[in-house]
Image (cartoon, rainbow, N blue to C red; front, side, top):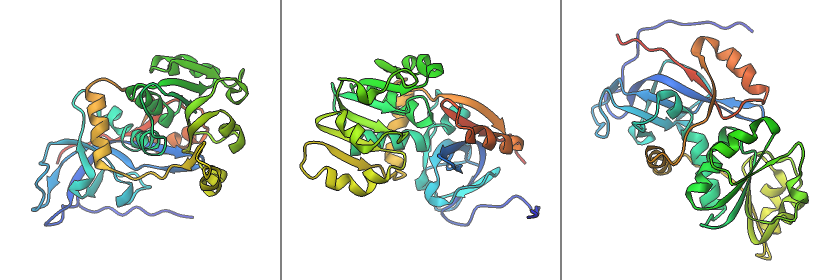
Length: 291
């Protein structure tokens, strides 16, 4: 299949709401084999006449998943309600690694998992782009956190705050005597019965990765109220992104970036991410020259 490139002048914002934003860097998110680029960190280039919250030069970040995503470009036009000011103490690349993954982790732990201070929380898949946020967010809630990862990632997971780290190449957490108040599952590599067995009475299992048993049978498995199982449905939310902004500015969390690729090497970035060996996030950087 052939591809064609059309060149045109730099687009201008519409007369009213949208804003034109030159993309500084954006996140490449991977879930199994689905790849996309919904999280962006950008500087406002121009605004429509009805825009009141931002002005040219503002540094912002956003999850634009509800406004179309899946491609890579130097400019994007989005409504102001999708944007939040970028934390001042992190780089564009670090900010690009925040919006979707951090909010997914926050919503899964808080809304589905009902996380509380002092609870024991296990993060299955603690070294990936989502898991690194889940560990840090769970700690910010005052939980005792156990992270599950491979041997090469043990020190990383411990460094971002996990109280305990299980190397899955040597241990199977479902076979331990330890029971957890909340299991946040990013990998979905165990049966639902294994996860439920590892929960304490009244505990919550939250499937972030696609787990059909949790999705379709979760309500049935949770019917007696002793243990709960649910699947996370991510909802892009600027208020939750503002919470992450505050956590980052308070240095209660740090984006973990594996590699940055320039836009011209986006195909290499795709291959690297698809291999599934990355730690934290893979970020695409876009050089921008003002005109």
